[in-house]
Length: 467
Image 1 (cartoon, rainbow, N blue to C red):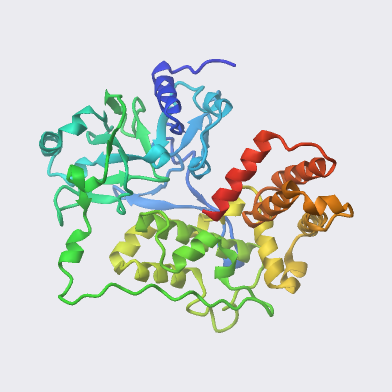
Image 2: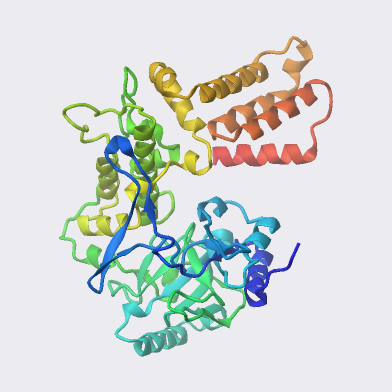
């Protein structure tokens, strides 16, 4: 396999990999007229393929698909490709992926926050009167917190600063100020947030620059280094006697009898967010995750002609569609209309897809529909998918059924394997995983020992499910 052509970029990739941090590619900004962002067609809603545009200098311009700051790479022919970074929030890229991504010399590099407790602290010059005042504020901040002089440091392509630290306590906010109630001057990029690193060339032609590539220092929380939520001013301005909003009561859903409630289509994590839980220790990120899944599930239902509660001549029922449910989350987090609008600026409702569709398989959604309304399932689900689901159900019955061999019911390993199979199905594991568990169960039933690697994998997945 050929070595990457950009030695400096590859050095950053190796530095990240050595610390078990995900190295993700960044393609340079591309001509938006050649690679525009396209909104997918949804004829059922009267929407057809079109290009998103914006006004600039009196001209209508297409929004770019490749911004020079989003995960993407150039292949050997210089053709850009997107990389969906959510796939690497819980795993690292393989060596094969890394060599594929970084083969082109113009491909840059970035990483995600959250891995190994790492957070990227990003100071933006737009938060200061000038680049010079930004530099002065950073110098004063470092003098006040000298530990940070020994941490990972870079300059961004626009003249800002980026530091890396290991946090013992999740920050609970993204936008930060240098004083309680102060102005927003930067962002803390935590779990699932992407950042571009040196020596990537930014959209304006300037590179990100490494100041010192050293081990990130460990701190307890952001207040120890003088970083505070920039929304704390809102708390100070609340009237005396203000009481926070109570926890929302669970949503009552009524799927069946010819229609599905939108809430019943989304993942269990999103349902938790809909009930007011901040699963990502970042309310804005939790809201965005919920919005994307809600819009995506609604789009999937329209595309597959799955009737949702509220369909009909009177229009959507107010508490059952994506928009109203997203506002419910905003109310739970105490967001006003302006803050909710800023968060939703990161979401394009027309291009959202459910999580299972992003993984390349919508079988999990059809299983939910089957459980909720068998009539809709049989009328709308493709026959090939129905056959595949029937096959999975039969495999589950075979594994779960009592064995004719009396000793099998006393075999604790087989009991654990059956629990593992049930948990894998509940976690919507791919068919290949279910088949592998079934094969392991057959081997154990034949008296063969279970391999240590399979025992460890079973233990990890079961623990993750219960956590």
